Image 1 (tube, helix red, strand yellow):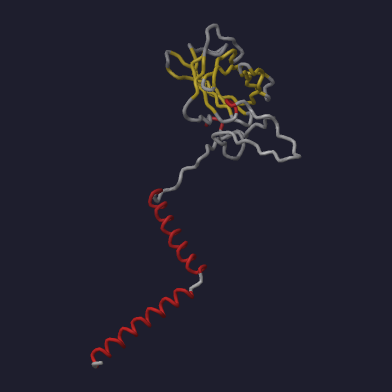
Image 2: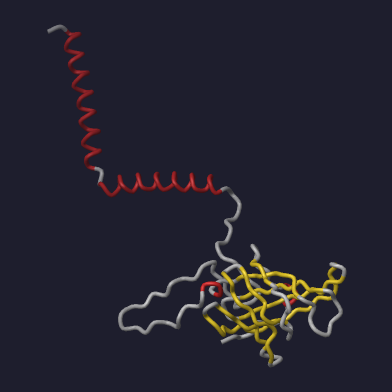
Length: 222
């Protein structure tokens, strides 16, 4: 055999030997170490994609925070209670229109004893049992004096759902309202007077916390 052929054979053997060493080292690496390296790379790639997709700005909250009705956020939809075997179920769930905060608005007759042609009435009902309202007196369709009130709502009928807006601090009732559906209230009585014609309040897309009452403490409604 020539010297050239001998050198080629030795080089080939060295190459095969190096490959054998690399394969042996790879086989000796523990599965846990390899998986850890792979998972870390995959996790970082996923987080980078999420961060780029979400953008650098803050994420919007998924719940609505009201200025009354408790210190915690009010969920957009009621959560079903989980009852394990041997436990007593909690109190019956509230009717759906009262299980989340809702605001209603409409034009109603002028409150008795006040000088106006009509009034714009807004009321927000909280799941905690509280309500707040704003009454804006209208003259020539222009807003004038504003009245604000708060209290506790109570269910007085179920078919259809009917509530009263009670004023515990004054010992009276401000309004009597019927849910025609989840988005419409019929006014049976308001400010101590029963309307001659039918008046309705329509649900608003945004919750009105009645900011005029922001400084007053929340009422505890049982």
